[in-house]
Length: 229
Image 1 (cartoon, rainbow, N blue to C red):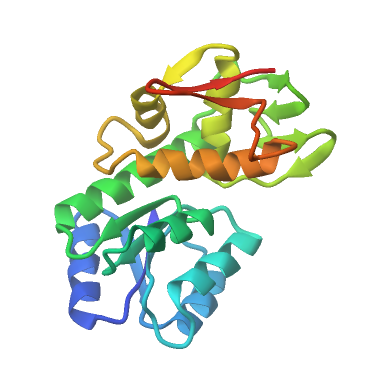
Image 2: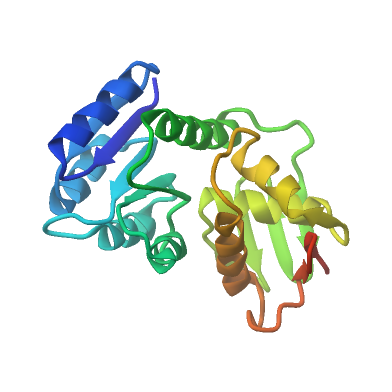
């Protein structure tokens, strides 16, 4: 049974999320502030974290940053803010996806299931054709889930690893934005394409010599992205 930790200081919302996820056969642990969330994360080792941005003690950005320092567990952020910059900052700090309040519980459950499925697929169902992909100074070991760039190992969150993997598997081929979203986030993904753009930006910061003039992950305007190398 997958375990999800939900962190939110709104008790009523916390209970609603707990109920909705429990009906899906998911074990739920909860925390109401950032300090408790970090302590509980270490003790519970959840498979996914649903994390509100506005929290007492430690805010969601700080919690996300601290989790990312030691773990690549999928993180789904909740935010009541309308400003796009808040969502982008959350993604840049390592979140895999976000939901803006108010949201439907059905949408939240769909996002959680999609993230768990992708994480479970990567961990539990390795493909028989797994190999080592090498191009442009980047080496990606599909079986070990390891990446090195110009000889130095780098740690990638799950979504960034999968995005890089798909791009390298299709080296020198243009992949449309929709294809990348379908392959990385699943066909039932209900968000917009901003998530893809943010992940590409983060990935470039890790693999490009100059992220402002990318040579490996190239934008094909109006279409999508291509890995050159």
